[in-house]
Image 1 (cartoon, rainbow, N blue to C red):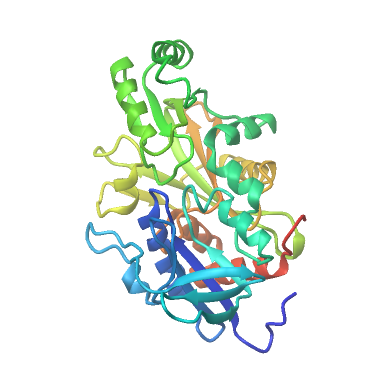
Image 2 (cartoon, rainbow, N blue to C red):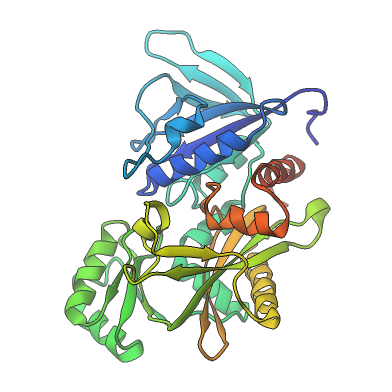
Length: 371
């Protein structure tokens, strides 16, 4: 345990990053910054630019809010933040002596997508011997790669949708073979997505071979590794999971449902983050008690199958026959006050500030290294 009883806990909130989810990470950070009680926490906000530079930023959450259709981002200004080791942060500016910021007790890495959510920053923090919120290197990496994730979930006996992997080396020289495999294995329509991206970036629906080619090319703009999945008819339901307190079993939230209006064929970026009235989140979902309980139990099973820690959101398809498929697991789900994950826990009895407190407390209790 850290000796934080008689002083404020120093939390480095890291956000932005190099992935296509840079702006969403900024929005998430704004929510967390607003929730961190200054009486309990001393916050160091650290933004990572799209080029990968770490900079010390303002702690004003309003700067990270969505304004109409304008998304926030990390400005490439200010001194560069460095992490020499054991949480000792410093700021370096051209022509100036490095300024020490001191040690932090815990890092809250609010990064979505590659170069952050995928185990990379988790590995850096492990090497630096710094505690952090979220899953470790393995679970973070697996949770980012939808193909490997499905393999492990299926290996644990959890049902997943049928899919075809389009490897980076297979598309250009074997395009016809890939199209034939998709047609034979999955049929039409299908959903095409980058294997290692989130926030529905690069996701589209394909109804035939021509649309499949266009969809794969769109997905490859985000990731050379692409996943093609069967189109599952049914409802989209989600459940939050938290690491158990005091080393206990993981806990599952109430179940929520995403309902899309006629303007959306899928829960895409626009539906998730930009203003509109044709998308609703039903929390709790209108489900029979036994179905909701199955979702909760399977969410915990998925959390454990991937060796997750701290938090995760597990997404499902509920088919018309009552069967469930695990769609994916997110190790750092969207975390704005209006995002599904915090709303699920609010309905379960843990409000947004208390949820942030719990995640920090869990990180402080957890050692770095093998565990």
